[in-house]
Image 1 (cartoon, rainbow, N blue to C red):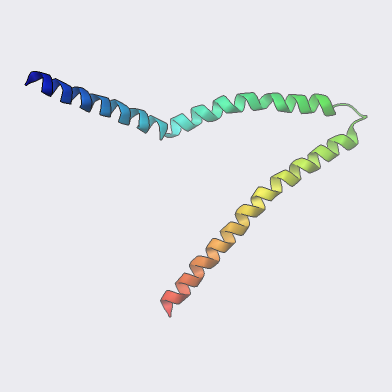
Image 2 (cartoon, rainbow, N blue to C red):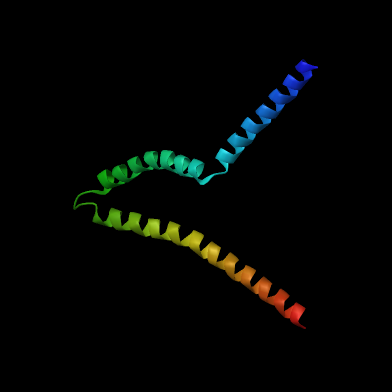
Length: 100
């Protein structure tokens, strides 16, 4: 009888430990830790770009890279804005239907 109770307690302890791990994965501390680890490797790219485009002879190349960065930055913002407008219109149309 004691063996069965010990097995049940061990099973409950394993479930509790597993839920602690799952809770850690879903916390903001985990995401902060992961973002710090991945951001460390991103710093090397900026130094490479600066070294490749540095100097007076590469002014046109530097402007082209800056324009490319702005272009790549604008597209996701436009997509989010379009999706936001579509969702807003959907909610407004549902609101009008329920009001009538």
